[in-house]
Image (cartoon, rainbow, N blue to C red; front, side, top):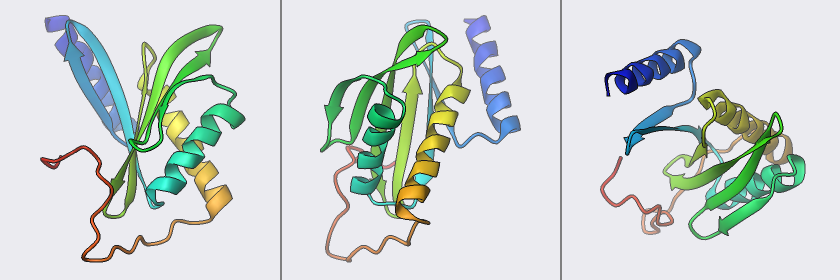
Length: 149
């Protein structure tokens, strides 16, 4: 367990040093999983549809699971002749969306690079993000996060 704590400290230190968008780390049953996240100033539908096109069309990865309403996408990530599971989750926020990317058994920079590609694709296809306006009476789409962050 002490080695696991050292690994977590190294990853957190590197993410702070490199200025990564955001890295969440969880330890489950002795395994280490990282999840990177980034905020985008685009609405839920724009962000999710662009994520699907990036994964399937631009990168040519196989989509293995997809839930449009929940904003969840699971895919086969290919690198160096290796295929590992990856996922993208899009969550609506007050200012646009937050996208989380997880790629199993790979360093978090793979997730960060994928999020950077998504950012570039959104800007190329939709232009710069616009301020999201919400009616006071209309709630945000359900993000599944009832208790806040």
